[in-house]
Length: 230
Image 1 (tube, helix red, strand yellow):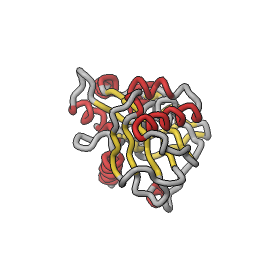
Image 2 (tube, rainbow, N blue to C red):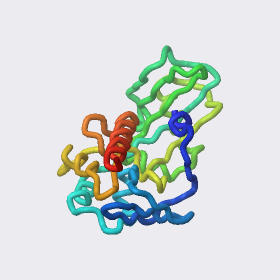
Image 3 (cartoon, rainbow, N blue to C red):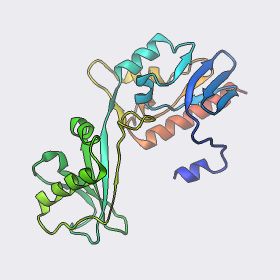
């Protein structure tokens, strides 16, 4: 999907943004690989990155947008992809077992040709496990499976672990509304500032916390940029 969407675009990798200067008719983006100038920019920084203040806006973002960034929450949900030599589950779909530890009790059996399960962990437990090695995390997830299925669970032949909180370019998995926040904060976050247009899952009123929500806000921002430059 990402390769298809990126086809034909001029992408600059390993180009970390440090400062964004913006005014009524131009944008200047300062990065570790030089300065880029444009008539407008679409800002898709994850909410966790905005909350951490990793990118400086000059002038600062309006107070109402800063307040929205502060009020909105950035949640954490990590996944462990486990590919097995053979399937020991009945069919693709959700697998939920009342097991201990309950932190490893939710799995999804994918419809992939190779027998693959996804283990989920969230919140405090996800934050704690990010400090462990991949091997330790995989062992814990497999132990959760064996607590529900017994000894029929073999060792996985391949595994992939996410660490969204530790990723400096994410700082979490997706946004949520904690106490004190409201959908209006998402609208404030999405509002343009000068020639800056904002997009991302945290900006979507109807489909936050989703890939399709992020995609739709990106398209909406692109249309707004096109209209502003006519």
